[in-house]
Image (tube, rainbow, N blue to C red; front, side, top):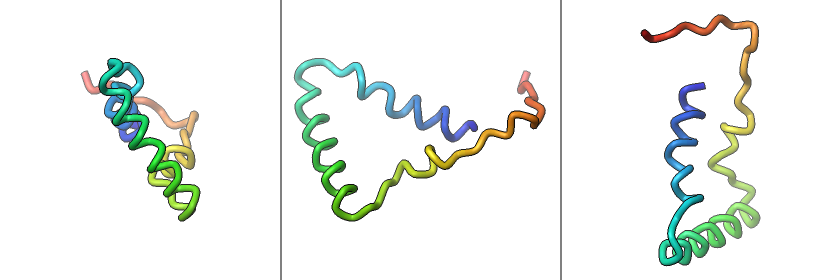
Length: 62
């Protein structure tokens, strides 16, 4: 679960970029999506396949 949260923190900033930074972001995302469609490779697949065991106890670190 920590890995999913960490990935969200890393990628969350991409959603709130200013107008100048949106241009390269959109280009990179377009190229990445085309590549994934062509190859079938999805580096984020582990997120979608992640399973949460709702019966497992949660322990606080503090």
